[in-house]
Amino acid sequence: MATVVKSRSEVTFVLLFFTTLAIIGILAGSFFVRDFARARASAAWPTADGVVLSQLDEGGDRVRYAYSFAGRSYQSTRDRVFIAGILKPSSEDYAPGQTVAVYIDPKDPSFSVLEPGGAGLAFVFLTMMSGVCIFFGVGGVIWTFSEGVDANAMRDNLHPSNA
Image (cartoon, rainbow, N blue to C red):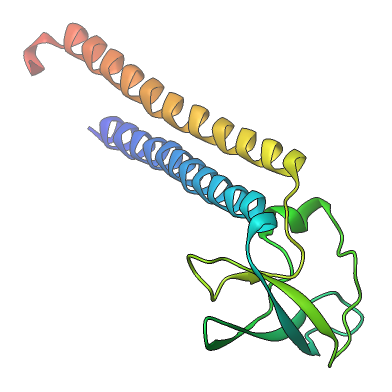
C-alpha cells in the first residue's frame, strides 16, 4: 500500500511539473507573439511630441516622459517594447527637458514607445523556447499518463484478486 501511495505522489508531482511547463510555454509564447506584433506595428503608429521628465536610473537608458494624444495627457517609462529591448541597446541618451518623438498605440494611447520596432532574432529564439516548453510539457503529460496506465495494467495482471 505504501508503494502505491508513493507512486501516486510521484506521478502527481511529475504531472504537475509537466503541466506547469506546458502552461508557462503557452503563456510566454502568447506574450512574445503579442509583443512582437506591437513592435512591428509601432513603426506605423502616430507620433506626438513628448518631453523627457527624468532618468530613472543613473547612467542608464530608462526615462520617464510625458506626452499628449487625443486631448489627454499620459506618462510612460517605456522606451521600447520588450522584444526590442533584448538585443538592441538604446540608441539615444535622453536628458530631462529634451523633446522626443513618442510613438503611440492608437488602440491604447497609454502604451507608447520612444524607439519603434523589434528584434526578429530575439522573437524567433524566444518563441522557439516557448515551443520547446510546450512540446516537453504536453509530451511529458502524455508520457506520464501512458506510463501510469501501463503500471496499473501490470499491477492488475500480477494481483488479479485486486481487480
